[in-house]
Image (cartoon, rainbow, N blue to C red; front, top):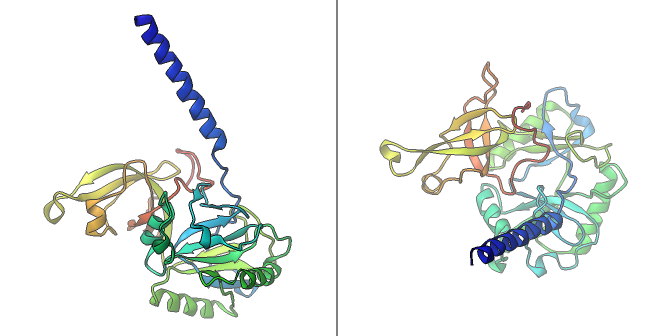
Length: 297
């Protein structure tokens, strides 16, 4: 009997290993996305076009399925992508200004809810497989969106900027309406994956990602809720974040192992973020091109 039991355990172990290997082989690779760098005053703004930075979930349409930037396939209602082209589209799944959490929840749902998805728009800003520069890609993209002819698929409007003062005035208007910031895209650049993409983000504060490594209980008014979380950056730096959370988020905080996005204002003399505050959970795991723990941020 003992030998039968040992044999059964070995057999089950082999089955589980086989399933794990199959799952790993079946896991889709992350899409090769153009990623934005931070803005600085040396950017020649007249060589860029500017649009609002939508606070949603990055959605990469491969021509057959939609992926997050970490490669997870998004389960979409059939009607949402009816008539879409068989070429790649890059955009943001958006539920409106200030509604990132709602968009994230809808996008991460295992089974798509028709009513929920009707609150989502696909803000399309690029054609990754097109051979032309950004100007040429925008002309082609505008034509494709007109052909799709669905109210939830929107070509992101790009604006010419003639000066840094005009750029900052546009940023102020977007933020005053509840927007997150701006994206600048170099008009003469091809679609280049990675950080050297000709994309620049401009926000009233910096942001970054970190992984939750501990949950700390609250005290006083926060007794019985989460008081703060300890986090670790992709570069291995550790610190606590205790602000930016709503009471609902404190009652149901991110789990240990989850990734979050936090805002901050500059860095301390030791390189840690100053005034770090929680912005939202980051669906899909660690950020792309994250350095290994112990490396630079």
